[in-house]
Amino acid sequence: MEKIKKLSLICFSGHLDKLLAAYTLATGAASVGYEVNMFFTFWGFNLLKKKKDHAFMGKGLLSRIFNFLMGGQKNLPLSMLNLCGMSPKLMTYLMKKRNVATLEQLISAAFELGVNHYGCEMSLVIFGLKKEDLIPQVKDIVGVATFLKISEGGEVLFI
Image (cartoon, rainbow, N blue to C red; front, top):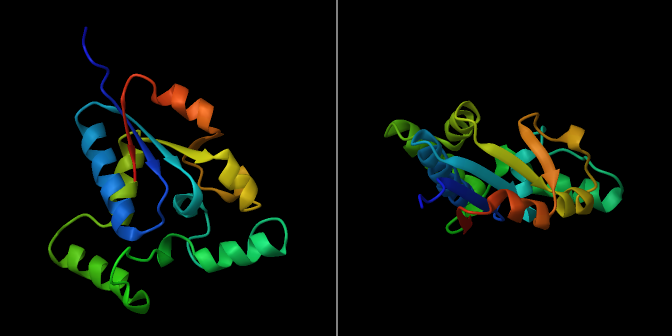
């Protein structure tokens, strides 16, 4: 019996380096024929927002403040040695200088390769957002049970 070529990534972290790892795995697997499913929850959910910079969004004061502080895709910290927000800019500079795909380029490649993006229903509720607040490439908003069913038969990684 041939093993199903499927990779599912649970993106819990909102750190630049961890999302780079997730998207490197996703695009690599998709480029060799794997079905790839990415599930964004908690801090990783930040990557799915349409607004890529600091923005007051969401239902209720606390959600609006929380979403502003998370900052969107343009404000992802490094998990170590963040240096008051300077390190992500330095890391991206080095990646460009050394001809290594940046997070933005990897995300674009993932969309082109058909990587499925799913948002966590619980995170959507906690952050007071609606599906309309998210990038159009989000295939669906699902709960854990649904994502487990989508992931069934393949490898699952938690990043």
